[in-house]
Image (tube, rainbow, N blue to C red):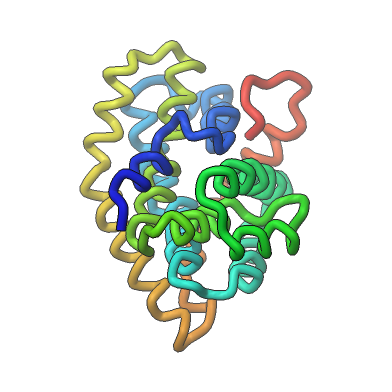
Length: 224
């Protein structure tokens, strides 16, 4: 297992398209739910224990070799918002391009052929980790951290928030990221016996509603 590969995959400069998405933060800023570092921390905490937990479990299951087509259906079922499903598939398509160029893999090629418009990003992330020689826990960490680092980075741009404050938010959430990863990996390990129903389906209704509102804006800084 290559720790260098994990660093490449988790690097914000890896061309996976995440820089264009705010994880719901742009809508939350406009609605007044995020006004500074304290609000950002609460937003990220809520996202971590809902959307990021689901993504981490899907990524971990894909890294373990669970059928990615079945996992993609499970991701759809756990994403009520059409706008979020579109965003997840766009991110999946971009990550697939970067992954196939970086770690060529027959499994990635097969998934790309199955979903030419993009599979859900966490599923692609898990297969990418697998292609890079990484394990389920690595994939879950990437997904969980992306779930909070994306909004934190976006809010720095949206509110001109001090980057030091945003980094402090991410550092304080570290122990909770660890716990979410433990839950995600544990659930992924049960899929072989129980099927995809073993994976979390933690709901975040305000994120779903906000995504639909955001999708209707004529002018926006981020794609989601």
